[in-house]
Image (cartoon, rainbow, N blue to C red; front, side, top):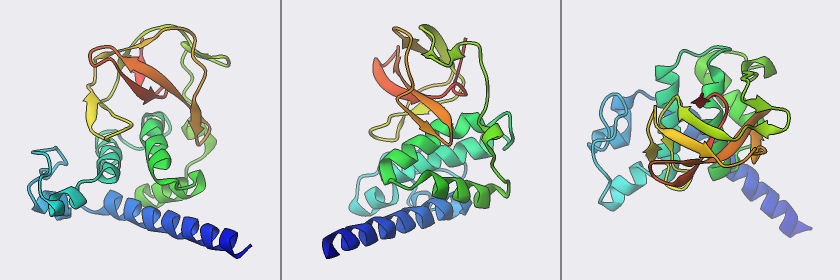
Length: 199
């Protein structure tokens, strides 16, 4: 019993740690980031070079890359009901990497943006997504997309992804369906929501 309590406490502590770091990274300006001070990213969050030293690697981990991607999206796409679907995949990858509960991710995003998020923010209906999944076909990415393994941008905006057959969601984030697709140029699997693709 005490082992279960200890494991639960460790899990909650880790959630709080990641949640605090996530919020801090989202709300800190690019030029005050350790990665910027070390010359790894510029004042707009653009990657300048890969980390080499232990100090640089600790300032630019997979977690940093995932949150930086989310931060770039927030800076680039105005927050609002028609655009929030574009953030679904970034939130999903952060959840997968950290284990932060969806409710905590939602409250962090609300605190960072000053907006209240409701289910309607994520409901972006597109004809190629149905109740039974994402239709087979080739789609174009509407934003740069990161590797689910490294957090690095590997799939650029306006490049193509392929859905071999009608695909069911592999997961959801705040009620938004997430799909695994193949990026055609790199042949790597990436995750998308319907806010990340167009026909």
